[in-house]
Length: 117
Image (cartoon, rainbow, N blue to C red; front, top):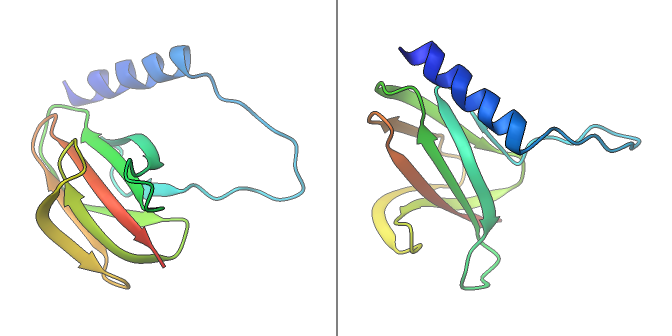
């Protein structure tokens, strides 16, 4: 079941958000990367409180459990914390230099608040 669900999600994103290319002199690194193909980054945005923090929303898309999912960032990070959908702290946190590793239940949504260094 997992592969067909991921294929459907991929097709939906490609249909609704086509890839845009822009000419430039250098390649652009991704702002957020995950180590598991079954975990998708849904949104990357600035925090609502105008602090300059970055909010990252990701979810498990295959309907299975995703363990040891590494999350990395294309910018310097001071700290990372899990938050709810209203960006209120939930408890898990990582300091600068610590790897962000998550375990997600089937279809679980996780929101991270990233304080930039």
